[in-house]
Length: 224
Length: 224
DNA sequence: CCAATACTTCGATAGCCATCGAACTAATAG
DNA sequence: CTATTAGTTCGATGGCTATCGAAGTATTGG
Image 1 (cartoon, rainbow over the protein chains, first blue to last red):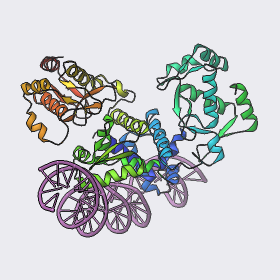
Image 2: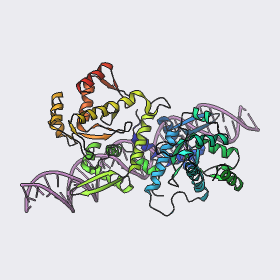
Image 3: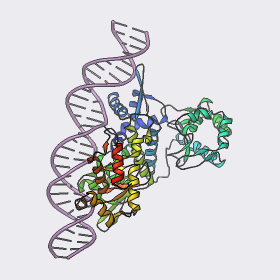
Image 4: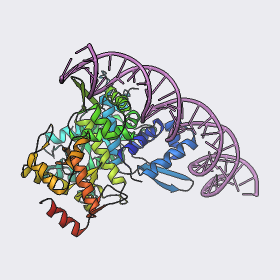
């Protein structure tokens, strides 16, 4: 059977499934039980939903002992969800508060596998300002100076470039309506922040919690 | 909670509505009746679908006399549909990382009920070149010479014209970003190609596979 | 005026599907 | 071994909605 856009739409078009998909936007693989809790449904129902999502190719599953870990199939799918989040926020009333009300969520979130939120858009703007990134709607590119900048920070660009995904790609941010840093560099920055323990992923949400010191150190390191 | 991604999903997640949305990807505003024909449903049903799409903000409507012209609300929405078309075509492939690069898919696809892809845009350009088609963003029309050209090829234009859908209509091609030949003539060309066994629909994807001889014959017949 | 076209609203039907209880398999822990 | 946890399959139910017939409004054209 050939998935057309209607089948994709109806896959996302269910409350329970959409909650699961959004929960998986954190980039982390989750178990069936965790996802059933996210979606507020019984385990049986979750199981049937997850089977559909896997069969249709939106999710992949990895079995590990008695657990089954589910994950978005790839960037393409994550991009679709992000896209829909964008649209839904722009379609919903022109309320004063755009985006999530949770301060922490607004300040910094994880979008699939890279940082999003205020801090991330600040970083992106700053990199464009310094001409480290040439801003292009379809795909931004890293300038020579930008390459040097990330090399100095310790990013192994040759390794990153080996991956199939583009090095650097803006990604519309659904709470800020601006671009933030996605692509493999975006992913590297997130892992850098986590590894230095400047921030922690908040379990049960997509928020990224910076410590005070971590935030200071982050701004300094990245020149904000 | 206003429109969340589940409501957007379920809006697209209906065959009739998704057909309408895809028909509107051409950028042209279409009337309710035209859209009901595209979706193969009655006028009443179309009316209720269109009301939902407008109310949710995916479409905008402009009243003009006794007609109501519908259009995608903006590029954001068009981008969503395009995104979903991309995903659906990449999900129907086995391989994880092909994307739009699959040669056969790129060379020639079926878009709804007419040909798309490189070959189709070449055909469209050639027809415009020879002034068989008067290219107009709002609505392309077949010139007298074009009418003769298709008559000579054996297309029963009077029968085609009897259908309510426009004879000839450009349709934005998502992998080429150019116009290709849609409308009832586009549909006729596709059936012509299939009937002459120059190409076969690939069952598990939207690709159209030309044989070597078929491709040669096609180019000759249509003057490419 | 009347007739035709464009589109909508209402109401009834029918099919689809999300949900959960109950009963299953499977892995782990003790 | 038994008990527990993770996850599945099956079947019944209930709710939701796409669909169209019939009847309505609105606009245009003679």
